[in-house]
Length: 105
Image 1 (cartoon, rainbow, N blue to C red):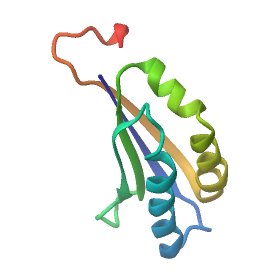
Image 2 (image 1 turned 90 degrees about the vertical axis):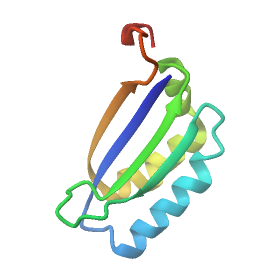
Image 3 (image 1 turned 45 degrees about the vertical axis):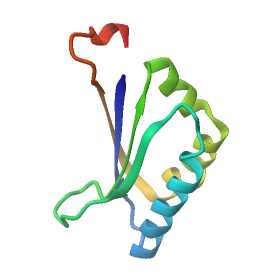
């Protein structure tokens, strides 16, 4: 099982209202994609954190993550929301099964 986390730094266009809409849109659009399990999105609770918005989900494998990222719902969210309102992204991947070699994820 692979855990994916994407941290986003917002650009100057992203107001507090836009951030709220980003959270709503991510949950509406991305939650429908079957490959993603335990999908989460939200905002930072600390103002000093430069990454104000995040997405996270579990995937059975890296192939399933790729399928998620190729899904039309994700691509639409990426083009309409992520590219429009974010300035930077940091993606993190973790293997969550003890004893499993990450290269086989």
